[in-house]
Amino acid sequence: MPGTSAAVIPERELDRLHALLSGRRVAVLTGAGISTDSGIPDYRSPDAPPRNPMTFQQFVGDPVFRQRYWARNHIGWRRMDAARPNPGHRALARLERAGLVSGLITQNVDLLHTKAGQRAVIDLHGVYARVRCLDCDGLISRMALAERLEAENPGFAEAAVVDGLEVAPDADAVVADTSEFRMVACARCGGILKPDIVYFGESVPKPRVAAAFELLERSDALLVAGSSLTVMSGLRFARRAAKSGMPVVIINRGATRADELAALTLPTGCSPTLDALADAFGAS
Image 1 (cartoon, rainbow, N blue to C red):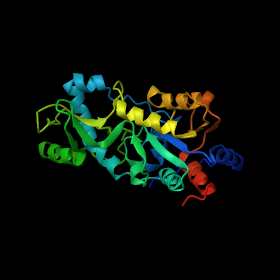
Image 2: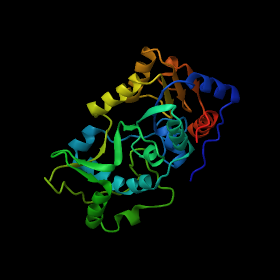
Image 3: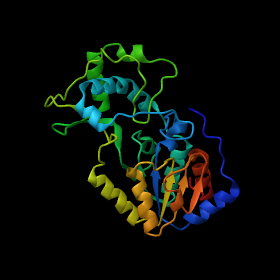
């Protein structure tokens, strides 16, 4: 497993964090920064390379973009599937079992919170392991699609994988040549298949947003971990929490759009900070 972030929370800051959250029902919002210690890069940390993720309009409007995406995803989803929870994910699951965390909203599609044993998880942007038909709305597993794509593209995955292959947070791998990759259509209706994740430019399904706001309503504090809150998809929850008077705590290695709303900001790594917090609450 990749090494965890070296930044350690000072004891006085841990005391402040403990005091802010003690005796409260805490809702958690996580972003890509919590998964970097599991080998999945983020989008906006200070040392993250520039990225241009696929937009919904590109995917639905251009078959060349779809071909490129599916070729790269055919490689990338395997790396994401192999990723394992890090101490930050496990610490949040410990805090849930201890009764501190009332529920978790994640902007990630990597399923690492679920793999860590977290029970009350809202996958705001979907998950990498499902594929949806844009025409009939049918769902299949990513594994089932992989078998079909492999049959159409024998040996492509093996030829494309190299040491140091980079995989983005949406399971998009950096693969140079995708021009010969053959896509497949929905087996039920022949429609366009799309990963069951929310792309840039696409709206989060209303039931998920409603469930996330309902979680906030029955919580007393919001803990943000590993998100710059750059996009409104996550920022709105910090704004709602602050407007309702509950303390907002942010753990993120860079600045966020909600720093001015926070009762406490910690520019430390998620893994050591959350692990220390779980220890402070005696969570097992």
